[in-house]
Length: 329
Ligand code: PBG
Image 1 (spheres, rainbow, N blue to C red):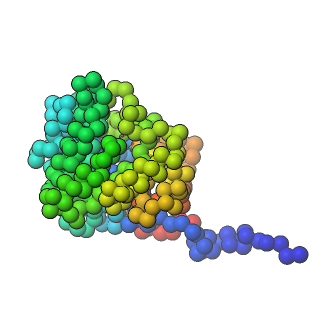
Image 2: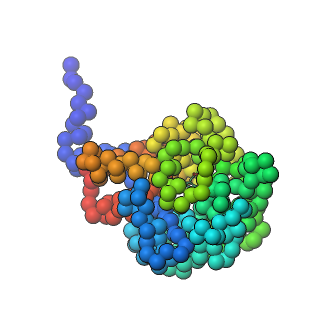
Image 3: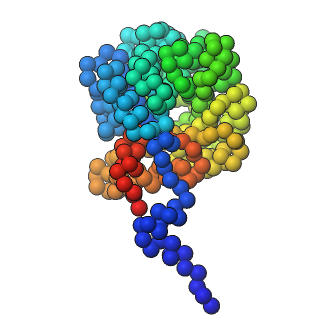
């Protein structure tokens, strides 16, 4: 009786490289970037070591690095000055609002060399920190919010976004944005919909990154971590409404959701390797408790293996550069 020897395929790095089922390429990675208004210099984000809030000036440099490394794109988040926050997030629509300025700046720098993407959401811009506007009773007003998202997407398209990414989890947001983009002649601007976005503790460091004003939580619009079938319902609605790509977020605690979505939609699938997932690895590595580079590679590989075509990650740039520098097995 001959024993089966699967180990034969693991004998050398070359053998392992040949039979690896999953890889992570630069073209599949998106770098999320924060741009803050009124900064003189980039400001480090304490809970995300290695990540900063950029100035418009330092943003230019990152934009080129992203394009040169061959990344899929750069996802921009705007952080307005406190005095420019209000109840309805007006700074999202202003021409000189920080995110619109950032989009214009980046697009002028990189043209079509990489994809310029924008977060379509109000939370960074409202003084109450919610992703939408509030009704008189304090609840988040879905339909009034969706109208603002539609106008916001038009502003982002006009400022140079190739891709808009609605992340507010309002019902009907994708359809309304698609209609608004088409009505303003931006029919070639793509929508990457945060289809299944969970109310997650893993967004913690992001709240510092965007100096969020939120008290309370987002559980009336983001999904309950207990639900997987509901994610499919959400994602299918987004596809029906015209989403070009859909996203699952966070990534690591939701790999099962990624797999299910992958098996049920034909559009490309993105996953967001969020701030808390980044912070956990960085914190453990700083203590010497895990091998940082190996943990990053394993994290990104697992998200791709679960079914994501593209991954948003704060490690995108660093990782892509290492791929260029040589094989990792
Ligand atoms: C909402 C938004 C959030 C993140 C991306 N878009 C925060 C939230 O929903 O509370 C989180 C990203 C991360 O944690 O890395 N504009």
